[in-house]
Length: 436
Image 1 (tube, rainbow, N blue to C red):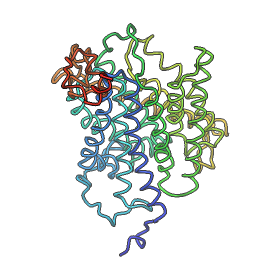
Image 2: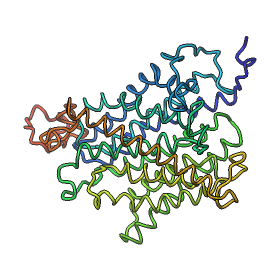
Image 3: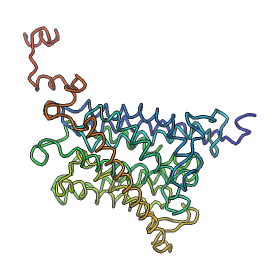
Image 4: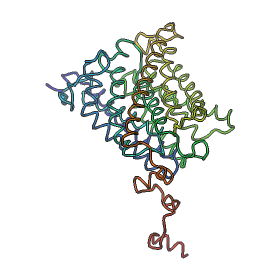
């Protein structure tokens, strides 16, 4: 039997192939975004934490993650079965909707990868790389996989029983990563010099480049979640662009009013905040709703990133302020701005739907946020008490790039840590220049 005869749509398949590649690109984009935000002594460590997540999560997902997340429910809406352990029974002829099941599984894998990588921003500069290698696969199986089943899996309780909506990942990606980042930040404690030393981004062009790659990949993230080349994908695509723009403008407005200076870091952060918020709602709200969702996230998240100084938790790169808060904003506003033309039935408060959907969205937010925080806190504490999660004071002071990876991102990174320099270590071209 040919693939076409089994219901595979070549147009949908082509679009999802492209969307999957776009979403995978988001993790290298995130790596650049995070690496630019840290000091020079931790650049490579941040890149490594994202890149190694690609490998770790892929192995876990193919071994058991996909089956537990998207297998037939066996736990009252809490977890899927083991029928597809090791991707068993999923050959090239297997179909999910109108696309090959293997492609659907790979698309969902890219979501799992970036969700794990996002958490690293909350513990930048101070986490043991070895502990991170253990944390990622354990966290993926115990936190990401169950939440994904609740929201998108067959028989998942949030989707089937509660009826909360999440088009592209506000709950399993944004809120889960943000709540988990907060938990790990509390387990590890603040960086040396937190609230005392200046910890400015070392490379803002790198931050903006990373944000641009994230924005580019986000079209696959959101529009790809339509799982087809159709009108819903087009609407989600446009909503994603619109919300990113108003998120950027909202953040800059707050900076100008509060600080007197619109910054490049603010522009990049605001765009990401808008994209975070529209992720759950891009398939539920109209274009007007998307503009409002993005603007609300840009404004609210720009204030939320400063909460860490008042509440004394060191969320190094604002995972809590942007992803947790932005995810909450976008998920809740579905209950306000959802329109029937997008959802196929559900309407939000402003369109005559009353408070019912808003209440469902709130229950989902609280349940997912609490579960992710508590389980992650437990995993983090266990690792900290056994193998240790926090880098030593000497490693943190010198920098994880040099002490853990035996590399530096820039030549002056070595020189800045007192490494002896001999004439033989200077490139010949550099010698000629100095002699001239």
